[in-house]
Image 1 (tube, one colour):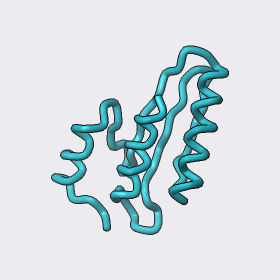
Image 2 (cartoon, one colour):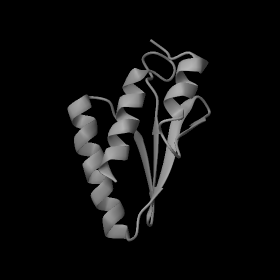
Image 3 (cartoon, helix red, strand yellow):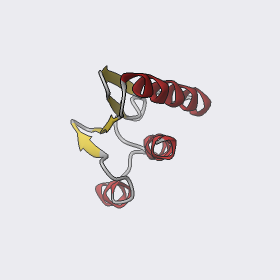
Amino acid sequence: MILSSTELSEQLSRLPGWEVVEGELQKTYRLETFPEAIQFVHLVADMAETLNHHPNILIEYRNVTLTVSTHDEGGITEKDIMLAKGCEELV
C-alpha cells in the first residue's frame, strides 16, 4: 500500500538525507574512496536480494545514489522505507 503524505513525512524525519524525487525515495551517499563505494554497493545488493526489493543504483566515483520505489504499487511503500533503513545501517 502506498504511504500517505503524512506517513511518508514521518518516516523521512527518521531517514536523514533521504528525500522524495519525482515520486521515488532517493539519497546520495558520499564515501571516502571508490573502493569503499563499490563495497557499499555490494552490501546494498546483498540486502536487496534478501528483501527481494531492488533500488536503482548510480555510481559516480565516490558517490552512490540510491533511488527506490515500489513499481508494482506505483509509489513509495513500507518496502521502500525498509530498504532505506537497511541502507542507513550499512554505513
